[in-house]
Length: 334
Image (tube, rainbow, N blue to C red):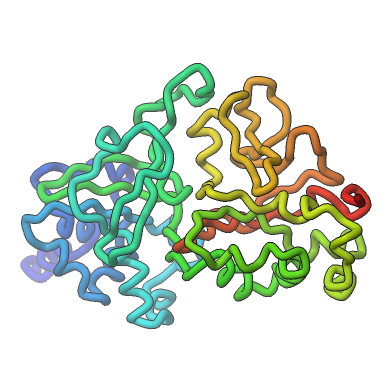
């Protein structure tokens, strides 16, 4: 009985309060297996066979959503993972595996450094840019963002790589910004507006392009219907009415703004050269805030708008959902 009890105890995962307790004597596989906080990710690796990819001596970096991070995407148990198509699950979890040993210090101090996952799709690693415009100070050398997601616990070192613990699972990129907007019904009025004003076709091109997309409730608040948007006379209104939401060429994650520390001479421009910046700008007015409101300096906003659908990555850009309009039609009559 004593031997049975010892055997059972040896197979039990214990919850590690601080995942940083990983040591160089552990491998990627053994670290995951011994840490209850990583049990869902460990289960997904084994279910898809990806645990075999990281089992050798070749170095990999794992971008690990812990169990709390999975919970933020409403995945609370292995049963929730079992509901997902295995092929999709393999692509999704594979997107969290990057060849090589990537530590925070090895990433350039700029935004959107590209790295390829084992699935062949690109991820974007960002670190705060030093300088007078940078307002982040506490622990700045340990800050790392990936596709706009925050690394909660950086640089867990093991014998065959590194683990970076994410705040939430990464989103798999879809084909294009256009495809993402078309597939999500909450943007149907905005899609109608983009088509009517000749802004739609570019969103399937090579990009990169970032779209700040107001949802249908944003239009309904001002009694703007799909029919009224479709019937808008483009000779009556400036194209800025809707082009203000489209920034190109750019790939903007919400965390880019504090990482850049945008100053007076560093701004993102929309396709009609209307610029946006963050509250990290020198004059402290307007812009994109992490987390917070979306404004355009010099334009104002009928209502402050906030993020509703963050960092939806596509192969040609990003969609950032917002819950308000920057301009109503009466503000853009020629």
